[in-house]
Length: 238
Length: 320
Image (cartoon, rainbow over all chains, first blue to last red; front, top):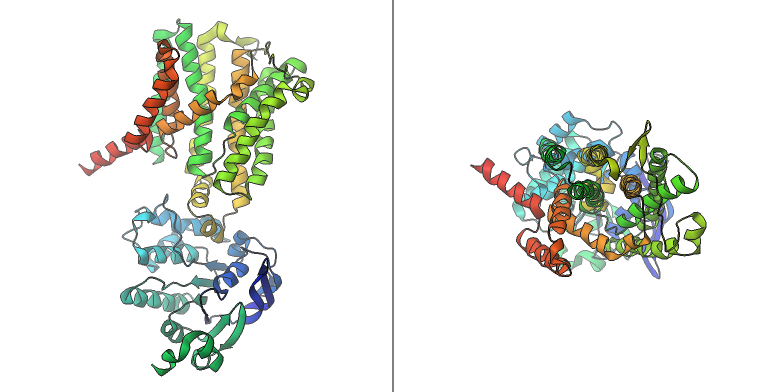
């Protein structure tokens, strides 16, 4: 479904992504992990057209190079951001309808928007301005707006960051439902290894923009290089 | 704010304006002030759409107003273009200029956009006064002195026929304000707000920042150019002095008094500030100081302007 081939991104002298290649299969939940500054979010920004890059990124056989973010959204790739992004000027319903109106190839589909609001459990808040939502609500809103674009792949950037145990459980359930009920391919960047090992079918570990390992979660987390450079002995002992 | 509330406020403001000539139609001075209220309401609303809704800190609105005024005046004087056609051409010219100014701004963030657009404002004055301006017919430092009034089917809309001219201005101003209102309430307006609130998120949801930012530059400069051109034909004279900071700052005051990003507050603000400024005329040199002090007090007391006050009242009423 998504293929990155020899993708490199440099910011001046800094090589943020270094000759990275990996493949995400249709319907998969694919995890990306690595230390802070490893280039995980940069990979997202490259896939979604925020930065130019060297190499090739293909989505369903379509070359994404040079495509601006809004066209990539229409091509079926939706994403969320690490720091919750919302539209404080708009209500929850209007914010989610932005995805449907602008990102979906079918244009505004009010029934679908209503369905998404129910799906992400924001029905009670739908007429509220988004600024009044709590952190979990903001994250659900971002996911809802992304789902309203009717994507084929959803990319979540550290969805659990700053969340408590109950919120993490709620978000994990939501991610499972998106994958199971909607059949969407999901890529998830996360620092919580427990979340990744429970949710994902394949795990990519990167450091300094380069791949260390890309394998089944249980294999990736027991890889010596991954233990040394990222998760440490404490995780393995536990 | 909901569409019906916007329509109600605009209806009340323009409705009151429409009946006032019955009482003051023969007082030319008052009629002139009312015409100015209607003209500045459009410019302030365009600026509010740009800054308050699209979040683009453009300081070029007065420059577009002057560009429109000069373009139409030059076309009418130098090329004998009928004023109505000259006004339309001036609108198109300023829309193109708006897009040209907007293009470099797409790569810039807030304060840098303000600098670029203010640079356009500052550069326009020497252009109009200098050799380039004289070559294109701006009249240099003398300005344009013989701009013909708008004439429709042989009827001349000038200060000699102040009441019909007032109603033509009201019609033009109302049309422009309604275009702005429907833009704000359309999906264009939603795109502007989304880009203002979070550009990256908006883009990731399928909004083209390039397209919608250029649209807002084109639309606001078109409407500002049209009303600027009309202003030139109404007054009959134009001077580069319009680009001094007085007009620039008073327009900003109109927006702040009305409430930035609280359309149609800018319409209300324009009416209030123009009328207030004229009422304070007897203060002479102290007028600007008094005006400035009142603005400081108003902004501190009502950070969302008069429209914020209205919204607060409405919320309290609906809460019981």
